[in-house]
Image: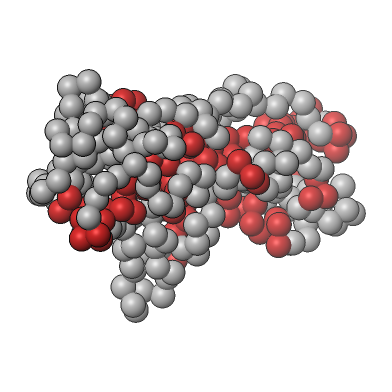
Length: 327
């Protein structure tokens, strides 16, 4: 039977007894400038504290006059747009991946309309990301984080010390990286649309679970001889465009892993009887593997990315944006 690459969803990271795929990247012509913003000087006129995501949020953790919530450190540069002639989609409103599973309007804040409307970089100290958002929008993102990670402000901020601007906690620094990552995924792989959210991977947990690699070969691969299983996949199967150099045995294990993590059969992407034929889902699956490649290359140490199919999919073909999307 003819097989080609079944590349499903977020795809291959480091696994047992399997070499990681080489880093892949979306071509430069389809990508705009990096999803990051220049650091801003300290600028604060109002110092406000907040509890991330509870109905009576905004004041619970640190009071209102002296908390100094300057940067919850969990966002990117507002609604940054790609150059008009870049030929790529603009970036999404970068608070959207955070607020999708949380709240669009902050609670418990006794702010005047002008403070609500002014840039977050003017209201809060040490805003290195998301500074172009309105202060109200920024605070909505901060209060939404509990719905995404199940944690309050103290996860990233020095709440007891009332020093929200501090960058001392590694969690705060990593949170910035994660929002840059989410923005890059939405921009580079999903045409600037807000498809991937914080909740997609975390689902109310501080750390997404690590998924075990499948160790069972799909039935079609059992027909191969021991010699064939040792050959590079592209020498055994037709139209292998990704994962070249992976031996046929590990290639088969990867195919079975993809199907397991999405809760589908091979025919989800392939045409039964003509596995080489391209389909929209098969093309998308290749793009997902490319996405896993640039995530690993740009946001994690070499060959140490924890991102796999199950990080987002967890047995379902369509990853969720919010809790309402989970079957």
